[in-house]
Length: 73
Image 1 (cartoon, rainbow, N blue to C red):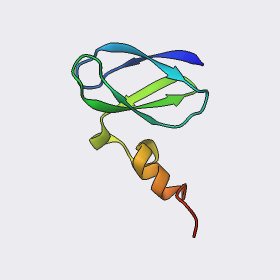
Image 2: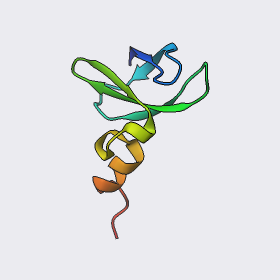
Image 3: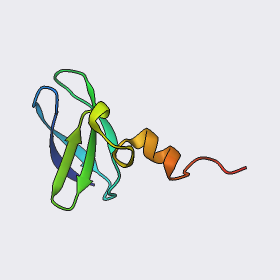
């Protein structure tokens, strides 16, 4: 796994996250302020977003529902 440098969008705390090589958004809890935010790896770095500012494709929960990743009947 590779480490990526990220910055909390709430308090600007610099952190690192382990990256599995997939370009999917994940939730991260800031080690300084404790707030949950979204880290979305991209070709040119990592986009760090507040959940209330993210569109559905950038929100891990919404993306899972929209992409049909749930169990099939």
